[in-house]
Image (cartoon, rainbow, N blue to C red; front, side):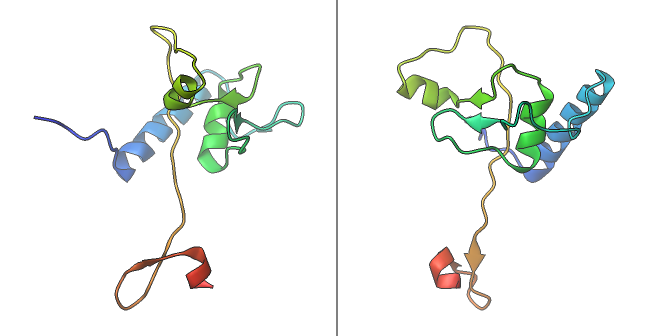
Length: 112
């Protein structure tokens, strides 16, 4: 039987809560000054700065360099992830619009 890797909102909330509690127990306050030398955590390939809870999660690890990649992005650049390397889970979210009557999704432009 094949299971889905997709997490539910409840699973993600529990995971993030557990990470925040673990960081607090380590003496790290994830939301205190979430930047280092004016550079916020960002995706190395897309140059997009992480926002919301992802910003707090990534900053709380205190990495020297604030650049991150997904596993697939590492592969696309010809790199390899070391065996035993750990990942940092982040959440993906996106706003979308629906028509009131039908519930059909519409584009940002159509919503304006």
